[in-house]
Each structure stands twice: as structure tokens, then as C-alpha cells.
Length: 580
Image 1 (cartoon, rainbow, N blue to C red):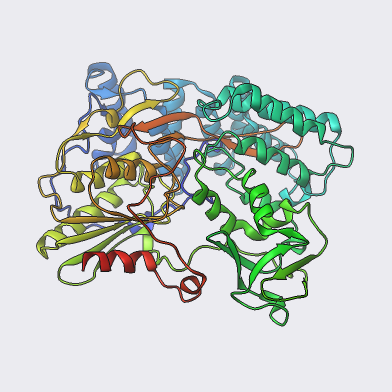
Image 2 (cartoon, rainbow, N blue to C red):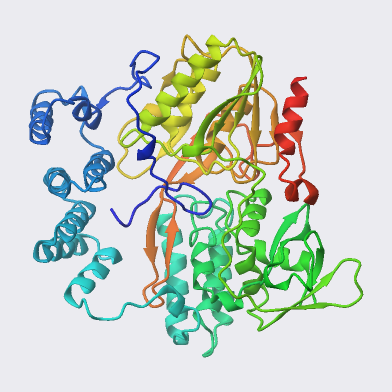
């Protein structure tokens, strides 16, 4: 299980929301969220609240004998996540029981990997190694199992840290072999690797990068070459983790020593750090070490992942990781000299003294637990959804209870105008997106026109017609978006756009109706660099929208540097004025 994750945000930050759980009574009937041909067996098991785990497993076996036409027993992932719900709750013995069931049913590499992890946590290294070894026998690319076996066999052996790779020099042959392996993995694993670039052009790009390798090439320089190859796929789910791995590799003393923000193609200082006597907040930087900001941006964006060619997505990755991206783009200079607009002489900056935290936009007020309802006045409310990471096999009830209770309040208060704010939403579960849409749509709809992934044998529940709730919101709807919006947020907003649910305000969304989603983590054999590759294809029924750009707003609202410094939410203010 360690090898496969869901993409949550541009920063690959997984936030589990168990603290949100409560015992409030649901406000709508517990009807199935979708029409489905078969009921997921995990849902049936979880519904038996008075059963012990052993009784639930016996129920599973009985229903598989007697009711295979009614229940879906083919989804290994849902069962795996069910097992991990016990593991994450420190109920390791029960997790092992579920993993043993999965192993007996599927016998996959991942099922042995799960058992290896659980026995490792239990302290039984013998059984852990046995199961990890079986996992590797089935899948020789399971590097996680290899690493765990190595740790248990040689617990005193020093482990190479990520930061050690930055200055490390590998052989030219090792680098070139890893570049070939990178191309092969992209072409064989990614389902749409040649959608935005031809195979010939991708292979030529790899050859161009191989020609730049020298006996002095460092790991830091190498990963920058890899970044451009991966970015050429134009998939937000395929990267080294947006720019997190590269940022963590870079020694802090080599980082760009002040915090900056790119606004409308202008680069402004937002925090001076230990250079307060040399530069000012709001100063506009026009060049760094003699290279114009426009050239730095142009080169950097070739190395940053995005869905299609969505520039706002790249803008936001740059703003989050600018302290690391700028050194990579300038070939890791020892010092930084900046030219500020309006000043005649360049300014030499002191080196950074600490790691620079990732920089998020403070003008967007995130809710506790990513979900909140704000009553602006007697006529208007704001429903903020900062994450769709509420999967059916995990914590979907947290999301549904919040939406149900919010809509009950909205209807009771007779709210006329509803702002749905999905800014800073990195995506998540289609079932959460669909559940919200059932309160916003006024007619039946189908979510996915295409859902393709390994092992699929029939239509998914997301490809079947969905009926809106009877107590749906029937007033005026407005939608707030930004370039952070990724993955499922693009799916959600594509249907908002397709069905004309209401005005859309903000900047181009960081995603759209088409998504190479899902993720598997793999790594290169010689440099041992880990990266993520998308494994499936999901496209909503908004197929008339272009694949190359994000969902576009009806009202484009730009933030100024003064807005940012004053933490002024111009998108929300514009929308509220639009209502007036």
C-alpha cells in the first residue's frame, strides 16, 4: 500500500480528517449516493456496526457464496483501504485479518506488501520479511518492499537521505540508463503519455537531456533534466510531487533568500527575511543575476507539471516553491543579485539562513477541516469546500454529514444566494463531488463519460445517471475558483460550466474535465529518485470543453500586490458585489 496514493493537492499533502467525526444525526435519508449495479461489499461490512470483525469477515464469505450478483467483490482497493482504517487506528491485529482476507482473495503484490507492513508494525520481522519478499517476487518493481527488507535485515546501516542526493555524482552511464528508464515508465504506465506530446518528440527530448550529461553532473542537476521530461507529459498527477522533492533536496543555504510572489507576470518581494536592510516588501524584481524574470519564468515553466498547459497551475506551483525553483533555473548560483525596478544599482542579497517554508496564499481563508458554511447576511451564504478528499472507503460520511447539515440550514434560513468556494481545493473523491452536485443540479446528470483503469470490467457508479436531491438548493449559485484547483475540482467545475449552474469568478482553474488520475509511485534504478505517474483516465460528460486549458471563469479577477499584502480577498468581494 505504501506504493500507491491518491493525489490530494499540488503539494501532495494528505490530510486525514478523522478529527471531524461526530455523532450528529443525518438530515436526509440514507439513500445510496449513486445508482449502482452492485453494492460495494465494504459498505455492507461497515454497515454491520454490531458485528465483530470476525463476524464481518464471515459475512463477506457467506455473501460471496450466495449473493455475487448483488455485491461487488472485485474492488481490491476498497478492501485495502478498509484494512488500513484499522491500521491507522493502531488496531494492527484486526488490520492483519482484513489483509489476510484480501490476500486469500487476490494474492496480489500489494496484498503481500500490506501484510508485510502490518507485521512490521506488530514487531514480527520474520513474517514481515516473508510477505515483503513474496510481494517483490510478484512485482520486482516494488521498491518499497525492497527498502523495508533492507532496513529490517541491516537496522544499523545508515540510510541515504534525500538531501545527500543533491551533490552526489553518479556515472554518466547510470544517469543515461535512468533517463531511458524514465521514458519507458512514462510510456508504459501513463495511459495518456502521448496525448500532449508525440512519442517521437518525447524520446528526442530524452536524447537531448542525455547529451547534456557529463562526469560532473550532480543529482540536483539531473533531477532538473528529469523535470522537463516529466512536465512534457502535461499531467498534474505525474511529477516528483509538484516540486516538493526538488525543494527538499536543495540545501537551505542555496535557496533564494527572500520570499517572492508572481502576480500578473511581475515578481514582487513579500518577505525580506534577513535582507530587510537591503530590499523592501512590494519591491518589484526585474532580473536575478542578470537574467530577466520573464526568462526565468519561461525556463522554469518547462519543468513544472500541469494538466494540459494550464499556466495558472504553473503560476501557483512557482509561488509555492519559488525559493527552490529560482536556484534550479539559474543553475545553483553561490550568491544572488537582484535588480529592483526604479533602482539604478543591483542589490546583493545575503544567503538564506533557514529553510523557506512553502508559501500559500493567505488571502484565501481556509476553514477548519477544509469545510465551512458562512452566513453573510439573511440572503447570502458561502459554502467553502477546500478539499474533496472524502472517499467512499474512508471518510465520505464526514463530507456528506457536513453538506446535509449545511443545506438544511440554507433551506431553513431561506437563503437566496449561495457562493460555492472551491479555491485551494486540490481534488479528491468523485463521490464527494457528485454528492455536492446533487444539491446544486436541477435535473439528472451523468458524471463521467469515461472511466478507465486496470481491472475495470463494467461501468462504474460514476458513469451511471445520478438524480438530484429533492431538497436541493434552488436559489442563485456563484462559484469561486483559482489555479490551485486540481483533479476532481476540475471535474466538478466542468459540470458547473456545462450545465450553466451560475457565474464563475476568479482565475483559470488549475484543472478541467479531463484527467489522467490515480497515482503510483515508482523510482529510477540508479539514482533512486522517486516520482509519481498517473495510472487511469477520467473524463466528465463535459467533453465539449478543451483539454489544454482549465475551466475558465465568467469574470476574471486579478489580484494586485497590495491586495496580497493587505490579505484582501478580491474574488469574494467581487462576487458579493455582483449579487448586489
